Image (cartoon, rainbow, N blue to C red; front, side, top):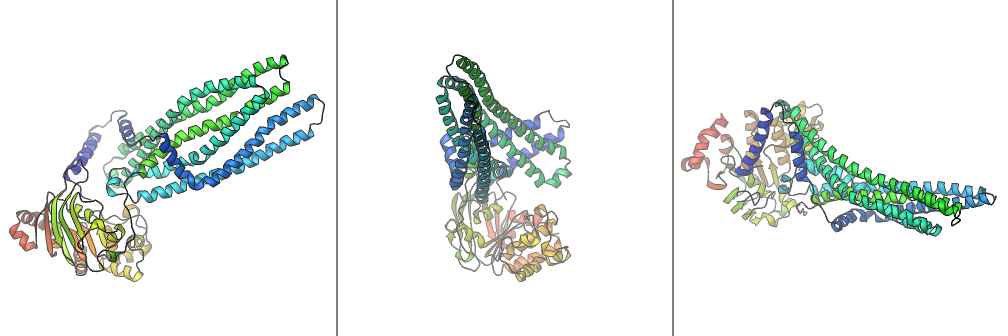
Length: 626
């Protein structure tokens, strides 16, 4: 993809500056990699959502599963009720012992309550865990579908690794907050209130002592919760940075090895991992404080109740069985209080993930409407017109196109030539609607491309990018990627046209041979031929070739040049080329310079009347053609 000179220069300058420093400093400053990872993680941290926005986003994930969650919560509540009955049964047991009565029935009742409560809570836990996995699955499906529909500028502004981490690690954090957290808050709250009521019926004085201790320590726990959310959010951003730097390294793996940069790249990844560890430990620290506070509150309450309750038993204010039942309820209170603290903690952790997911969901997407190729002007070759088109990638960047105007009738071949940064590839991006023109109009068959359904528009176009990307998978999967319904006969025909039939015969598994990550098992020329075959198999009305033969040898370049010329008799072909052999075949040549069209004509006409084209033809084209 072609970007403006300023944008490319800034990026190249940053890359050169970074690589230059890495090469000059034999021993990098301690902590430098950690500082860079920290800065990037800090920059990529999602913005905070208000409590209302967080709950709204949370409910959106929870809503399709609310009936199942309600069932799990109901079963968990039954298990909680069975637990609440146990201290009362224990009180009856103590009273019966004092009266020398039979305790067999009470023991059987206690045993039944314990077994029933355990079984019901196990079933409730399974239902909630299964539902939680379903929540994560649905969130991932939705997010993946949205990310693959992002507009190209949105993708270019975001690190791919960070987007991937939102699909993987961030959605995982939804597991607890959308089910366990909600159910724990509900059941824990009801159990807490019920237990408090029963404790109050047993002895209001001891209840007041217990609540006083819990409120005192609970206030301190409330101060910890925002720290958990902040640390988790920073940790998730750092996890996204790990994915980003790994994707960067594996995307240029040969360059990394050829540059002897393994240790430097390892240091960058390790720094990102260290940053994630640092924030994860911080979150774990505050979660531990919150969890330990629950036990502390109960233990202090137990000591206070034991001392004060013993004094009340001695004075005859309450019976021993009442104190025993109260102490059992006090220990039982650990579970609902723990559930409440866990629910709040999980909410703090989940809110960080929800904020990052919501941020990804707010990225601008394309509206893909159904449309067939013939919807864009029929089945014949397309015409392309640019009317005073201006364009820049962002408002803070200079214009790439300054009033670009030309017309391409169909069929035939039109070549775009000019210095690097002239805006040639951007022409293709505007035709495909990867970008929207800032001003002017881009017309296909006389109609603005913004008026065509995106699906139908792109179905009519075959596009071969500069780097001719090949996807991991089999050769067949790559060939039919843009035309999944292609028949074996059509595949064989396009293999011959793209000079790939000999390659298929040499491959051990033919079309079913795996081509490796980004086509690593193919040569550069073979990848270009696969990309061209993929575009031709689509049977487009408009074929866009961006330096499609730059890596081919002379023999294959000549063969593919003839194949393209043959295709140009039936479809409209636009080609960005730097080889004279390709340019001279064109029916017309559009000369671009600094985002403007300076001349249009045939090779002979332009050599005679345009100095820039004459200079290019005498140097770059002729040199490339030798």
